[in-house]
Length: 175
Image (cartoon, rainbow, N blue to C red):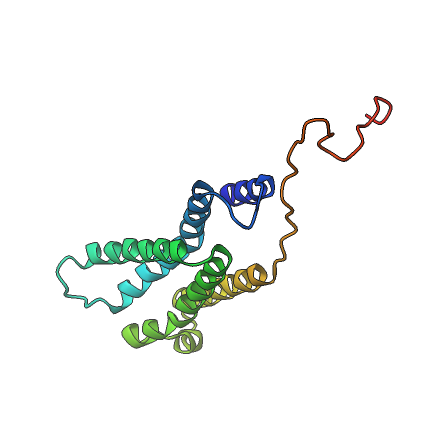
């Protein structure tokens, strides 16, 4: 979140916030992949845990490979999409991944959410309920990010003979 705050404050200092320089855009995209993309990667890891065949050679390594492949995909997505859209799209994507994860859980373990609740198996039910809660949290992040209205104005440039805060210099009494 510190990097996100840095980019928000840094954007306000740019001469044209709508057209930041390459370095700023790169940091902004790395933020998206680091924060939202990490959630996508963790969800991909869990999907791999449920869907990769149990007898598969190097199954554990492939779960980790899926994590990094998904994270790289999130970075690629963040690099090619406008920043605001990339945030929203990645939050929605991980919300869907997490919300649907109880389905392969039920199909591969026979311990779906409703079965676990009926049996009083709070360990498995808790996992599915946590996944659904995290999906809701990510959906909330997507909605809030989509609704956010930026209040940035271009930074004022200093012009010789003109006070940087306004047209008239302030007197010592005003300070």
